[in-house]
Image 1: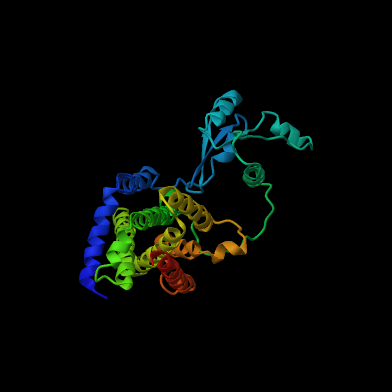
Image 2: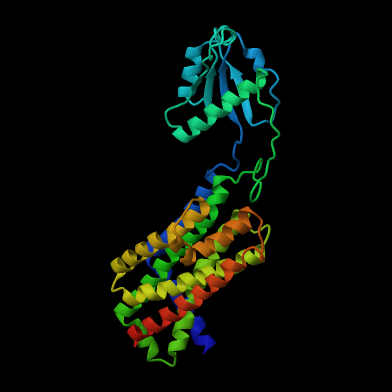
Length: 352
């Protein structure tokens, strides 16, 4: 390979990329918006719930609730005030204990305690909280069933250290930033194919291997520089920096190979955007399932974006290092080889 030719090609590609006003402006604006989006989101999660209480004849039951248990009780003067506060989301839930509760209890009847929720709380949460509140009142009133509780936490115990949404979304933002550069590099190659620039370059001493090396390094450096800047600004390289950098490099190599594939089947910018959007939709699904854990089909776990985002998510948010990510790194490296080689082979036919 002729490194002088490759360097000249990279410089020319950068000039051509930012000469295109659409992709040049969108690259800069997109990075700024991603950074702003991260810092606008809350940096902490409130792990306590506020409960409103109307109980003029039994409020003393709640005097002995220990602080720091995750629930904060506020008493109100009337049931109507309690309802208004729940509707206005001042209280997560409202508890109303009628004045005849003890009379019903002493007469052998089952007393009624009213629990108020706002309309946007899921039914599952309503059922769970109603049962928990009933058990809590039984315990406070001295009627609790004596059992020995054994608490076993499966996986990392996140009590008291829940992951803020902005940190949970950061791996997804990184991946989406990578995909935007796929579209930019694909458009650059497609434009040069349209105008005959590539044919003219290959008529010079530049060889085909120099061409792919230059385009590949352009895509890798363009995407990695933005993502690395995002990670630095968000202070996400404080631990396992080596693992994160390797994962980012593997990720940008993967999207560079995808850019070659998109350029090989595209005729103009419209088709580039169309294929790029399709790739984004397909690959973002596994990324979302990693960030927001949910039962997923097995086919989702064989897409490369799953391995990439899972590495970043574990390293950034759970402090899991190399040993816990080997099963992700090896498949991701394998996908890199496949996409880059396949992209070069198919695009090479179109270039010639």
